[in-house]
Image (cartoon, rainbow, N blue to C red; front, side):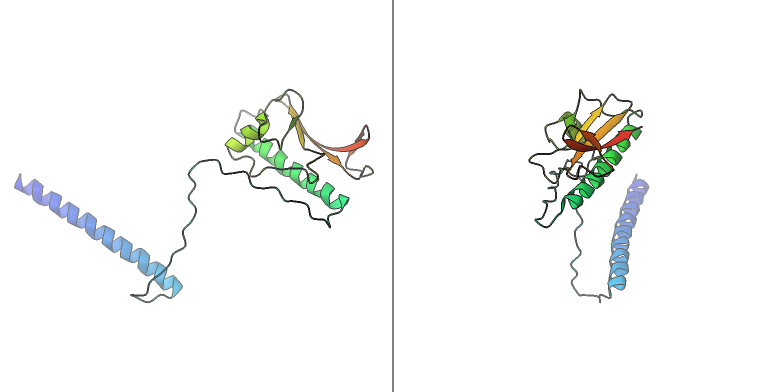
Length: 175
């Protein structure tokens, strides 16, 4: 019995020594990299820890007064590219199926099925809102096998968009 007790003490002492030595080694390595001398206090920046909770939606960029319709149309193309990437990532991890909708949904509506689905697993990193959000939005529809993302351009003569009534609609289709 006494031998087992001595082994336990030795193991505990060894663990404590490793912790102390390991902590000192980490501090020494850090201080050597930063040129810190022994006895000097150090402020180490704290990194944000991912708790797995969904963060608040990142506020969309607010258009400035000096943006042109061309600038806003280019922003729409970029935004739909980002959204398309998020949807493709979703499909990659969900049996190659896109989120299904009944007709078009506003991708920027925080209460919409598609927005909640893509945000819950961080496929969408922010809420993408059309630069003229009061009168325009990004649309999404899918049957699960394919999808369409849409944005109405301001420049109705832009060759990247298709006429639809009095609008010119930019469409991303997959596949």
